[in-house]
Amino acid sequence: MSGAENLNMTAKRVIPFSPPDITDLEINEVIEAMKSGWLTTGPRTKELEKRLAEYCHTSKVVCLNSATAAEELNFRICGIGEGDEVIVPAYTYTATASAAIHCGAKVIFVDSRKDSTEMDYDRVAEAITGKTKAIVAVDLGGIIADYDKLYKIAEAKKDSFVPGGNTDLGRRIQTAKGRILIFSDAAHALGAEKDGKMAGEFADFTDFSFHAVKNFTTAEGGASTWKDIPGIENEEIYHSYQLYSLHGQSKDALAKTQIGGWEYDIIGPWYKCNMTDIMAAMGLRQLDRYPELLKRRKEIIGKYDAMCDELGVKHLIHYTENSTSSGHLYLARIPGASDELRREIIIRLAECGVNTNVHYKPLPMMTAYREMGWDIRDFPNAYDYYANLITLPLHTRLSDEDVNYVCRVFRRVIKEMRI
Image 1 (tube, helix red, strand yellow):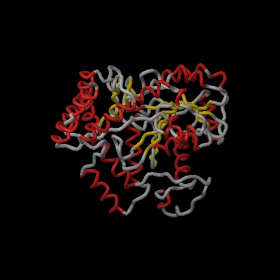
Image 2 (cartoon, one colour):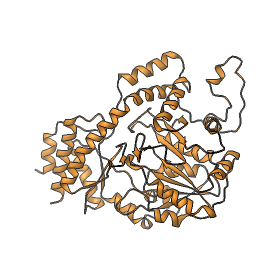
Image 3 (cartoon, one colour):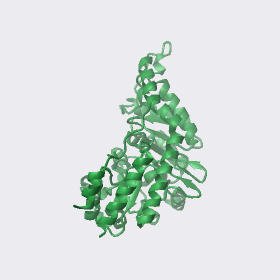
Image 4 (tube, one colour):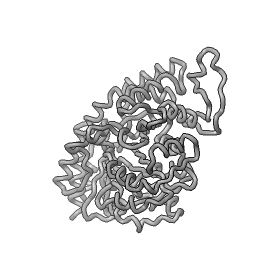
């Protein structure tokens, strides 16, 4: 009888990969929202936006129905579109790239640094052309990328940057910045800190995800925030997000409830990606609980780190002297393991009740991007990082006993599979 069969016979737990952490606080707030009669974008959404801006130390936040919508609207607000190029890491989820493609821009992938999820900043500099209008960094796993390096690259290329923009606001933003814009895909990173700054304070424009598998959830949902831009009022930018997210309608439903406020205009034939008050109700109570949720993630990561260090398994470094991750994902890499062995380890763990995942299969390996002409052979570091990677379950519904069980099973499977 194999070790996996022994473990399977003695297993008393099934560990889900990433269930949402929902309590009666969220449930009761959603019930109150439904009883209020206000279901779509309304007072709870506005309150969540205000509280998130305070939390992120930014002037404004706009809540939307996904991080993908948030990133796409970030590009549209900045006038990025047809004829523009956007530099994106090859090692990320598709939304990082697809949002730019939705706007008509061309995505330029760059490889990762060796043994890292971060993009290779030297390759970023080499990829810049006269058409480059934006660079998107990804705070993968909740670890903030090196934005200082990206700003230095953008400043070094400043003389060759020609402001464009397919909208008046976009042209003014690009002109005010006077350089390639820096975007943050912070889908994983709400609550992360570095050098005394919060995720949301680093890039020119940032998007967050509140999907059900994220640390902070509104079931679906996301948000955008941005740095103040000299000469451009934040209210103008915020109103533009409202227009893009509500069919180009000049007033939202809340504004139309004012006496005599029924009339509105359609400024453009745009999109429908607003957040509802039912979603925001969940988010308000999640935000109340969020510091404790982040604390619990750190405790779990500490146990996983000790286990991986004992086994010689490489892992992300979530906490340093000057940075604190949001602790969203736990990426573990098995030294010397092939893709095939990694797949077998995942199956053995699942047989023992431990559900895992892989974050991520690099985008040049995906059909959609291969058909655009991208080849994973041009991104060896991204592939090597992926090939022996396993993402362990990391969520706040794990008890100490669950975590100990994951560690016990992982130790045994890794030791047996190496024989």
